[in-house]
Image (cartoon, rainbow, N blue to C red; front, side, top):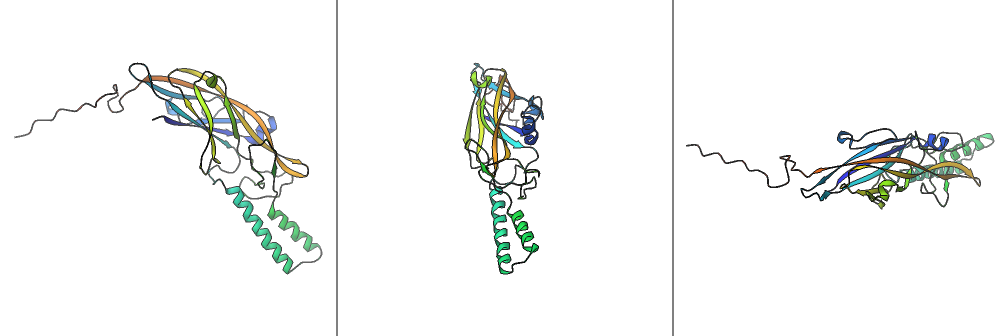
Length: 266
């Protein structure tokens, strides 16, 4: 059975948008550190992939890679997928309840304007998206704690997680790996993730490039809109191959040795 390897793509979205590059703003991790991966926590990750072959030299099994992109300084990725929609629904219900109270006991003078402004803050700012974005669809602006806020262009806010839109380069061109985007009911990865099967029969170091879409909040036509920003970052695979071995005896694959039965004691 192929081994599942995970690669975390952690992006400092705010600084990446400011500098217009992922260089120095991307931190890569995988779960193969103890098996030879290099550059953990940097943009220079080399993922170690251990292949295996049978005694006749044929490939014994493939490896499977999974890429998981996350945003640094945003809402933790462990919250459920519908978190933003649920928070928006709660603030709408709260604002409606407070408006009903306001109608039943309307204040006068400056107090009325102040109360309406307070309720507007509760409602927060709803955003729009452009046609070519792969990010959030009409959600409200949240801060890094997950609280709905009324955005004025200067307040700090949570960025949507990065979205990998393509994986290409040397490792793909040479048919070392076969990446594709898959749908999943997973409640954390938003239902989509990139995965690849790796051919481990050809040892070597191979590079690849990830196309990553970030999102900048801009004022467009009077509405706060998530503008897509497409950037790229590179990484490498280091593939090694060794003979298939028995996990118990560390020898070749075959029958397990059976120790001799000791003679019965008189």
